Image 1 (cartoon, rainbow, N blue to C red):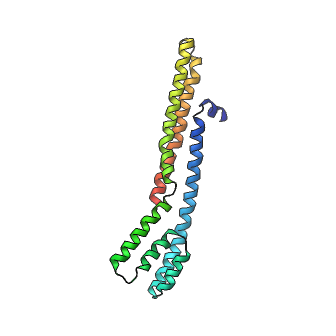
Image 2 (cartoon, helix red, strand yellow):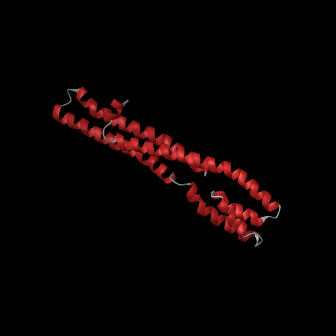
Image 3 (cartoon, rainbow, N blue to C red):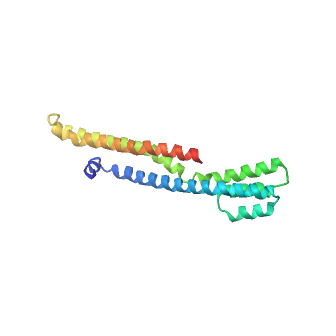
Length: 179
């Protein structure tokens, strides 16, 4: 496998780095989103029960103690409790808009990786073909084995770039829809 990687040329390294970054972001976001989802279900139920009992101050206190996005959104609504539905709704929407970047953290990086890895692969293809044409210029077309290195490099970087881009784009779309 390492031999194939090396035959792909120097652009295999940035493509590989992109794959490591994408994997790291994927696991970090999955664990984070799963964690807040689990905490949020219990938390929302607790706050609903407090509000039903009329314990608004206890609900506000619980929201202040919890560092999750949902607690901050609920806190914004609870702070406007009794001031009218429109004012409460606006506070909740404003707070939600502030929390979205927290939930979407690193997703733009994932999108960028999904977009640039095939381009890096394509650039590797160009370098590989230039190498192949340089061999033709020096040795002529009589030795196909001499061309194989450049053509192999071209195809390997393209394949590697696409093999990183495709799952990265799928992961990006999956995580974007979970937020």
